[in-house]
Length: 511
Image (cartoon, rainbow, N blue to C red):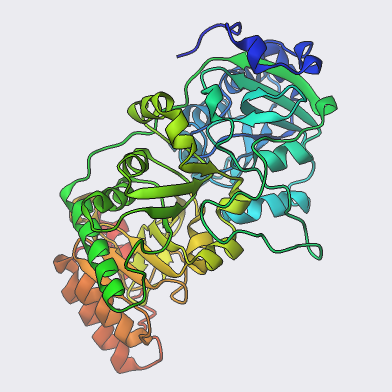
């Protein structure tokens, strides 16, 4: 839903007098963006992405191309942004370089043909790399906000991501004030300004998920604000589907693992340890399964909240959730708006350099649960590249939590494409998470606890517990012959990618 730029509460959203003269249309605002500029925008998992400004920018780039002019920008974000943003800018070939994460088919196609450069980055690293100048000057930042205070500080929207950094480093700032965002969100955010580059770093003083260490607003130099665009548009709704039987089976395996860890004394019985779950239907199913578990008053320290989390908060299963983004469906958005005062007490939105910070993840003992494309028999995980070469989305925050979590768990159905692809292969075609960081692998077939196991024992456990029955004999045959050849981590180098080669030749990994 989009309406005209004038809204009844526009004055209340912008009480800072210095901004009044900078209000203009989106078409006029994007005239301040030039070819070859590096543009950093708000948005994380579709939440808090600028709306009208992006449409206007794509139109401007398209007009330039129609006139025979070359017009591209370098696009930096928090993570993925709204599909419309990626698609509009990619369709006009408006993006020369994209960083650090994406999830839209048109942009993905440009990346995999080589017509768009893509830098896949751990999300906790982005702010530091930008401060260090890896991406040159940030010419323009376009940031969605809910409004500002009387002294000019900015009220964040439905995601925080890298916005604090963009506002700090950008030469020029365009603010998109979205009156569709509930004004009552003020107070839900905790914007920390204590980060620094080496050698001036200091400990981040968080010892519990609900700790607040910052302030509820962003700071910005008013002189850098060159345009303000007023809009009234909802975030792109994140689709939610009901858990299927495979996802439910994966969730049941995870819950049994937690029960066993409690019995072994490795997890506290009262509320476990803080949870992190990636995006997607499997992660949603795992979190939803806690609704019928004995665990209550859980904490979550994660990067994205989906609809299922709102339900868990509402019924008391989750006491507090720390995140950097609210990626909700239409129903989830309605629920948030209707009960914003309640959720403000149970949700904290932070910059992604804090939501994904290794120091905090390690200190809190976060349980990391992330999806994967494939794992090999020794526990190396591929999260990003289909058949080892074609980028899917990116590593996102999975590495931040996997490497530093108390327990690192990877989740996946055991097969894809109707059984033609096995999620368990002899050797991963691309490695994002090495065997040293992967502790538990779960499919609907079962769970492989790899902790304390040598490579050969890991391989047996993964094949027996996680591989689909259609592929187990072939995997055991490979492992038997590799072990006979010898080695600490036995492989047959001429067959290590035989599953992938078979798929490319026949359309199926099945023997």
